[in-house]
Amino acid sequence: MSDTDSGAPVLSMRGVYKAFGENTVLRGVDLDVHRHQVVVLIGASGSGKSTLLKTVNLLEQIDDGQIFLRGQDISDPRVDVDATRARIGVVFQQFNLFPHLTVLDNVTLANRRVHGMPKDEAERIAVELLGRIGLADKLRSYPDRLSGGQQQRVAIVRAIASSPELLLLDEITSALDPQLVGEVLDLVAGLKSTGSTMVMATHEMSFARRAADLVVFLKNGVLVEQGPPEQVFDDPEHPETREFLARVHAVG
Image (cartoon, rainbow, N blue to C red; front, side, top):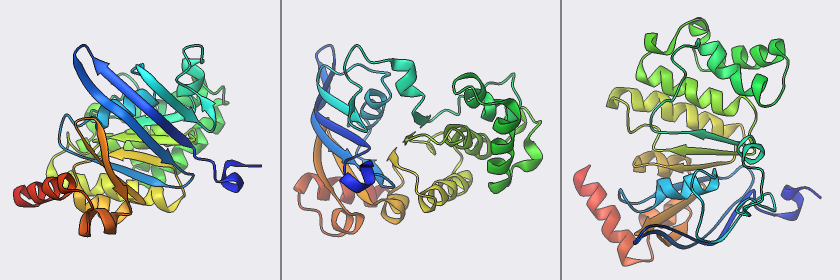
């Protein structure tokens, strides 16, 4: 039985705690992410969004609780970290492209080195994906010849080229000029239409409303509220959620 048939989540977090010294950043987080679902994390800076994503990708070890990827406890210290990360695609605020590699080599690297894919197959996938986002003419370019928006789109393509079970996106527009934000968010919206399973931290409320299946509001490491975007944005249950959204709208 597949996880779709059983209704089992792709990602499941249970009672997850994470602290840095005296500073507790995640406080008993419970979260389920199902196949083809786009889950958007919202909350003020320092609310725990980025740390949550880092615990899922095993960049940070949790202090308590469990994290399951398709039923496997990936928070178990005995888990193969590299094998687990190979199942997850990650895009960070900074593009993190290798400056000495061309766009094509950046995109094919994981499929060739991590997944053992033949070079011609890896390049076929890369060319198709880059063509789909309008960057077919940049295959042989180096990252410093691209705009910020182009670099971030390449970073996203690199993350999805290996067909990961889960895609994590951490504030992927925060390092971009405002006029470049739209092109990157359009790409993410396109991924939603192809059925990717995503968890995304963002400050872009209009995008969250448009693209999310589930919106999760974090405050001080606590998952305060979660629900469909129309419920969280138009009729939030908790005063903290209402206060946060009012502040965001006032600034916007």
